[in-house]
Length: 365
View 1 (cartoon, one colour):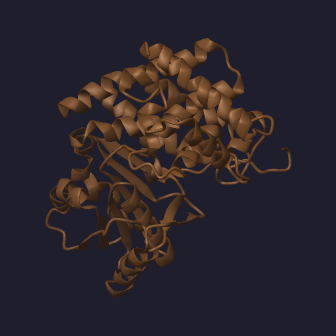
View 2 (cartoon, rainbow, N blue to C red; view 1 turned 90 degrees about the vertical axis):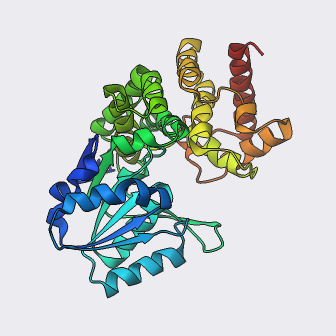
View 3 (cartoon, one colour; view 1 turned 135 degrees about the horizontal axis):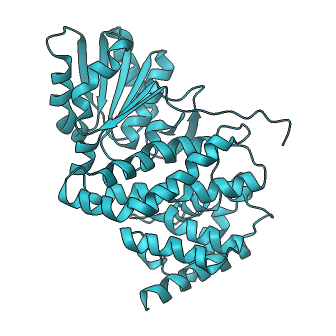
């Protein structure tokens, strides 16, 4: 669309490397002298001592709050109150997706700086300009979009390497969709996730994201199993957190994420976001009618790193469930409509079954 402005969004600063948290103050000290750290339990344990060490003998005010599990209105309000009472100048998220979303919302409503220190590379949430907000009863409320992306993101790959390997694999699943969904969105001249025209720069990052996963994914999994930091692990963490986050923000989602949203309608306990997006990417390629070689390349990558290639692996076992997923994934407003042609549930149902059959054939089932 010629009338839509193209735009690029990203964090103002991105820092990554082994023991990066030891350099926390060196990299972030310009934001103020009064800090609130919103931590998950594991985030507090893995980062607190290193962050404290980074301050040396400075007398900056520092408060650590262990976050209560979900980015809900009640929890955001509790943190905002602390920011106001303690005259906080910068909020720092230390943990996974929910801690990140809570801290982002807190900083936004309080009008202070926000730094993200992710402790797993399971999603691209650290770099994006939005939060998923839940009601206090844990039901989904809304996506909260911010006018800018975080001030800074600091990723300690030594911390990521110590986290369970399943988080890294899930992050690769989420990141896998970035290029293919972006490519589909640009073909139909859809808006980006942030509602602007899609830039060539955003698309280039999305493509690099997929190439990095494909070239370094298997090595990174082995490094994470050993708990060590290698160049391959650094590359994949950058792909999961930065290339996928900034890529997705500046392109858009399509069928892979709609497939995940469809699966959530089944209420399956272990339907992991990244695993569903990975299988949903294969489903999207079937829907688009791409040559077998491209589908096979994506399937081979999934097998290599431990992502699902069949429905059974994500807990979907009946045709009735597939029907329900197809219906839910095609409701008005879903990103599947960024694909060329108006995808109907009957078409998605067929594509899901074909993707599953191709996965079974690959596994020799």
